Each structure stands twice: as C-alpha cells, then as structure tokens.
Image (cartoon, rainbow, N blue to C red; front, top):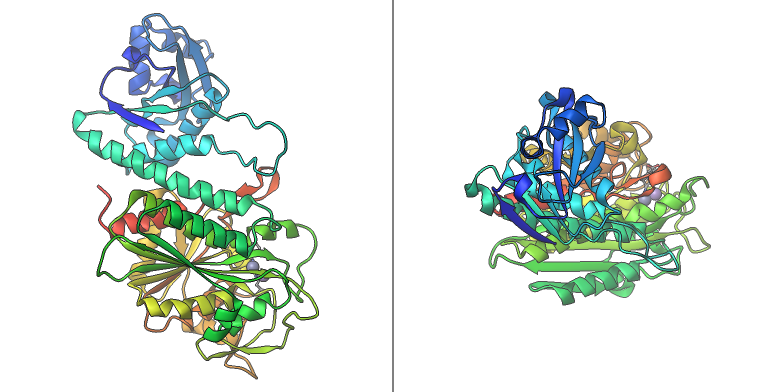
Length: 498
Ligand code: BES
Ligand code: MN
Ligand code: ZN
C-alpha cells in the first residue's frame, strides 16, 4: 500500500473516494465541512432530510458532488462528538471501507485523521488507518476452491494532516501499521488453517520461510530426538499420542548487537483434542486455534523483521498435537520436565503449560532481558475476561503495566490478573513436585502460577489470549491478536515510537 500525506482540502483531491464524517446532531467533521462548503451545503441538506446517518459506522456514498474533484464522497457516521475516541475512529473507518469495498476505488483520501481523537495523535491515527485498510481487505480463502476475486482494488491511501509538521509522524505510523497488519495477517492465516494442514511441521516451514525472506533473521528447528536429549519430557509427554512429529521452533532476529534479547514463547498446539482427558465434541473444531500463541509471536517477529527494529528478538515455539492413543500420556502419569522438576499430569487437557514450561526453561540460555509467553491457555480466562481483554500476568508489576499500557496504545487491550502465592498452593501434588492442574477456581491464575515455577530469576510475563485470539459464531476466525499489543511493547522498548 502507498501512503501520502497532505494538508490540502478534501474538495481539491482528485482521488477515487474521499472519506469524511458526520457526528450526531449533524456536526460535520473538518473534511465534511470543506466538502459541504464546496458543494453549497449538500451535506447539511442531506442530513436534515434524513439521507445521511450519524450512527457510528453507517456510511453513505455520494457521487459527483458539484464543486468537488473526487467522484465519490464516503460520508460515515461518527456517533457522538464528545465520545469520539480511537475505538470510534476505527469503527467509522471500517464502516466506510466496507461501503466502498465493492467499488472501483484504487485511491482514497482519509480526512478523519483531521478530527480531535482523545488520547492519540497523527502517528496513531495513521497507524490505525493502515491497519484498518489491511483488515478490511482480509479474507481467508486458502481452503476454498474456484476463482478468488481480489477483495479490494485499493493501492493508495491519503492521510489528511492538520499541519505540515505532522507528516513524518504520520508516515511512520502508516509504515508501522502496515507491518503490524502483515503480522496479523500471518497470525490469522496460520490460525484459520485447519489442523490437517497447519501441523507442527507447517509452523516450522513457515518460520524457515520467514528467515529466508528477511534480513537479520535466522530459524532453527529442533526435532523430537533433540528435545529428548535436552530432557524436554514434559513437552514430549503431550505429543506422545500423535503420529505428527513435534517441533521446537527457534527464531532469532538481531537488530541490536551486544544487547540482551526479548524472548517471546508461543503455545503451538496445532490441535488440542484434550488427549485422554478428551474434550466434549461440540466446538472441538475450534481447538485448531490452539496454536494462536505461536501464530501471534511469529506474526510479531514478522512485523519486527519488516521494520528492521533496533532490538534483539527471539521467538520460541513448542509445536505439538495433543491426541489420545495407546501411547498417549494418562492422567496420573508423572514426568520430569527439562528443569528437573517433576509433574503429576492429572489432566492431559492442561497440555499448554506442559509444553510451555520446557520452552521457558529452554529460553533461559538466551539470558532474556524479558521473557514473555503467549498462549490460548485456559477456558477460565475466557470466563474471567470474556473476549475483549487479554489476561496479563507477571512476576514484575512494572512489566505487567508495560503490557497493559501497550494494549491501550495499540488498541489491543489487556488486563492484569494477580499471580499470588496463595493460588500456587492449589497445584500441590501428593506424588510429584506439583500437579498440572489446580482445580476450577481461579483457573487462569493457577495456570500462570504453574508457568511461574519455571521462570525463577527471569523477568517474565504471561499473556493468556484464550478469549481474544479468535472469534466464535458466524464470524468464526482468528483475530490476529495480540500482534498489535506485542509490537507496541517492542516499539516502545526500542525507542521506535515517535
Ligand atoms: N486450549 C485449552 C484452553 C482453551 C479452552 C482455550 C477454551 C480457548 C477456549 C487448554 O489446553 C485447556 O484445555 N485448558 C483446560 C485446563 C483445565 C483442564 C485445567 C481448560 O481450560 O478447560
Ligand atoms: Mn487442553
Ligand atoms: Zn490447549
């Protein structure tokens, strides 16, 4: 996508479509006011006659207005003036893009970036515009047969500026937005692929392709024999029941020689049947999404490598399939993790923590500045926070706050849950060092506490994305979260935010 910035008037731009907005009670956005003046009050008149809606995201397309150069004006409802924030900005943009998606628009000019949006600036408005146009054109058609027409013809997006001095920030925002969107697209594609295609080997091949396509990026794949030599028996216990070979994917991006890396670990269970503790049938298909943590950290790696950020980033993905069979791990089995600690596996469906704990132990060798794991870890997290916020847990409150703040900045929100000692007591075992489940109560937190037993001495955060990584129902599909939050965290850490 090409982006340009301009302070020129909406009515003077000869693009295929200009985006303007209208607030409740007919208040016009800056761009709309200019179009209204140039066309002798057309917008005001149409609003009064009820032909324009100010409802958030509702959009009408007006064509061939007198005095206006662009053949189309997309007038989108912005809702209440006093409520207009980042969420409203994004919803109105999406509404407008949806309305023009089937029209022949190659170039659009977004004037909504002229609005006063609470807690944001030209950089973020450009970034959200870039993310918005990418998201509006996302379709998952890899598994459909037949002809696949392009969704949108869009190739150029203009960003209206209040002042010339904002140009650099705005273009930087668009560049970052495109990179984040590319990461989200990768994460969504991997998540949406069925488990018979997106196997651990497929994730490994994807990581190798990313390394081929980007500078300063390397990928290494460890097979089961190598994991056995390392003593990763906890991880291997999860894969015992399947014929699909497990992989440990290690990606290293070097953009800041001599500095300690940030290490992101992503849960890569390409299908979670529950194992011997088999899940109920209805909705089991959704457990193909159980690798969305892996997809999220790989997508974030893609964004970072595209931007060539001045940071060192490692990604570690334990990739396995969790199936029952005659060789599968059974409830009651006790295994020794790579750390040396023994685990009584009371429920084979609590497998995410079993692969993550060995990946966290493995990550120690990188002496991480910060270690972060990302996982669709618990149904309890969905009960606690629903589908809107990612659960943030950490052994360092400052780090947890960084993630909550990054979620606000990126509009990909998180909420902190307490990782307190009292909860960890629920993991006591009569036979091993501890059990892999801690009962129903506070299930998202006890899962976090389990992982915390393997991160001693490291600054670590855990993101449970069970509720946010995908949408169920009619719109079923991967969301691309938490790529925006993670990328924002890294942009902020390496000083790349303007
Ligand atoms: N992948 C699931 C968690 C999950 C469930 C994510 C529903 C999204 C929606 C995980 O492996 C799991 O099965 N967790 C169990 C843990 C329990 C056995 C302690 C759960 O949440 O039921
Ligand atoms: Mn499970
Ligand atoms: Zn799982």
